[in-house]
Image (cartoon, rainbow, N blue to C red; front, side, top):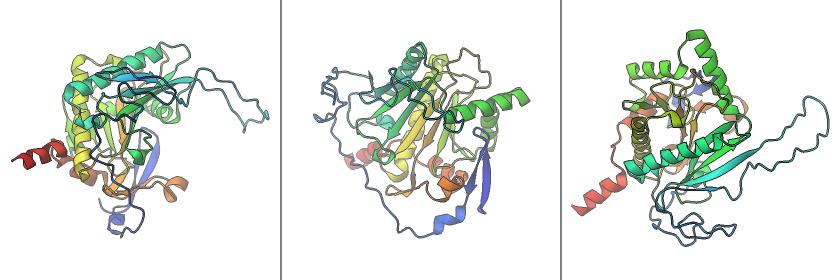
Length: 350
């Protein structure tokens, strides 16, 4: 399908414009600097490395696996004061928002990103996300927990030491709220979870599937916005990380490694992205409509130095993409499952 068309996203009830003919246009715009590949295992100037002093004077322990701490500069706190309303007009509403923000260092190694960790290490990261989610859900006033990672300076990451963040808050944010409404509506009308039905059909069609195992599948979604956007979806209607079995956690770690290694291999660079896991809210409900899933939004388009910008039409009208999801999936699926650094080392040692 190489003609301009638009596709519907049933998770958010929105549309995306697909314009495959734009891939042939010449590029004379901004190019990105490639992140350095030779970072040390330990950086004495890094705020996140073991044993180092952070900006607020706290000294990190000499940790050996994951390390979690409350964000030193949180966007959400539990000590909020509602700003004084300047008017009672309904078009000028505000309300307090409380929460807790945490940082999760993947490992003590300053340069090893998620695709460079082994299976056990990635499982440990997922276990940590799970443990922190449970702890935050058990905190009074916490209604939603968002696990996310901004990888690379192109995605606004302020420290190169591989880490993720967990923001928890007293209200449901916009994107999960849209997904709750869409999944609830679909379940009410069809008696089945939207994402379970969706992934079944993707596995039949196969042309957008990157990898799949017993418990999870990763696809370039039919409605993808970012050039190499992917969606990881569970095979059963599990609503929270702590509902995953040990085998499912192992499968999720396997899928995480599969897709992030392929990302890095695409342009032989540490591939930037924003990733987020969407769980159901902390409202004591059973949520039969909800399926645990994760979104990866990478900005790179043509190479390690050319990125997709969401500007102009995308900001003022609707999202637009230049390559079809099927073409993106084909590129990713054809890549080797061994990280290019390991492959290059094997070649150089021969």
